[in-house]
Image 1 (cartoon, rainbow, N blue to C red):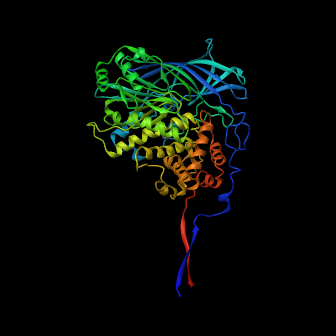
Image 2: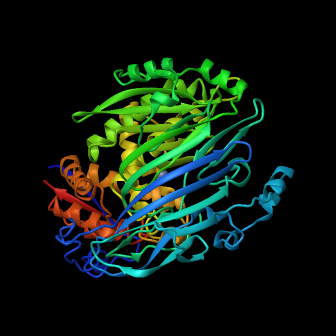
Image 3: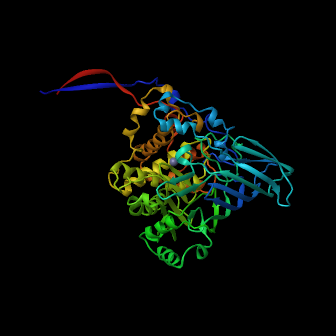
Length: 574
Ligand SMILES: [Zn+2]
């Protein structure tokens, strides 16, 4: 006879467990309609507006001033009659009237050094100076500026299916990014007395009008990013003659702006799967010293993009290689000052190519012709086809492992934003997680494919546990407006990335998850998805009821908290 002992351990979930946690999301999701279906796909009457831009931009390198002249053609594809249009004036974030100044919180800790105080006291005359808004015929149009938003009142309503063109002239002082911060601006290099400009949010841009928000004209406070319609761009950029420009889209006149030698190297790069230098370090150093007083105009065209950005400097070294995606070759490029080396010449363009390839596998094929990474100290910021990334070695060229992984991570992340939200064009002003969370998830997959055992900051479950079991007073659900989020990074980047990782590895399995995730990307590429479109598509394409998962992870702040309730001892006689 043997005696076998059994212990039964009874677990209980410590949070107040109830049926409600598994209730369907019928009340949380909007009612499906002909614009957005219950399957999560665009409906048969889905529409989106179009905004086309023709712009001439001049950068004055002596005064760091940008002047612009644009013709916007806005097409009303909605079934609604529009009596006014809303545009975004993002530079007004820096104007005295901006709400962002009123909501700033200042603590004693912010004034620890003379440098901190100098930064706080730094005055900068920012904001758009609108010179004129006229019809194509030259007639003045009525407009009203409300901080970072501008309403243009139309003489005649804009009917469904019709377009309107109008012209805006403006200028502004470009911000010193090192002194006042910002997503764009300039960096001054005292040693050689040169500027490096990363230019974005530099023109009055159309707001989105759609079936979900009407006009999306929530003020820009600096955190909730941008909501923009697709359109075609034709932009000419006038800069000092020795500057090198990188921009959204394809340059139309390399023949007139590059030297014969640079043009030859560019043609070589278009056939190479390894980076080829188009502007060498010695070219750049020569330009740094000579400082041309002439100007040149670079002309760019970009189709079906939601925005336009560019970078310009005489300090730029420039390299490029191709990355095949589907039947096309994407030209992957990097622009960086010598201060970025040796990190930048070694890794940047290869990381761009790897990111484009890997994201195309998990989401949808990258169909834009170029993908660019520009070195810009401290920040990481994304635009269609171009992004500005930190990662600067010490002045003697040495760098830590932390600096290297930081640079790798930021390049993968910002290039990854080409997919979320540049192609899968969600409303960033409303939902940060829809681009940051989904992007951080694919960033994690891309990092792991770049290097086995890559020390990813976000994605693995153990990295988010401390946040999720933290004080609930300072945790908001992922489904929270961008401006109202506590602990921004954990809420909008880390937690959704972890949630999708768990869905893929544990709840759904890779095969079901990858198919459903790709279905979402294919359905909503070059369109404007909402959270419900994502949640519904993931269920529609997989036959897995995930309402409980979305409720727990995206609509709530619960964490798993398992405790031992009781242990019972049994004895079996055999
Ligand atoms: Zn991001």
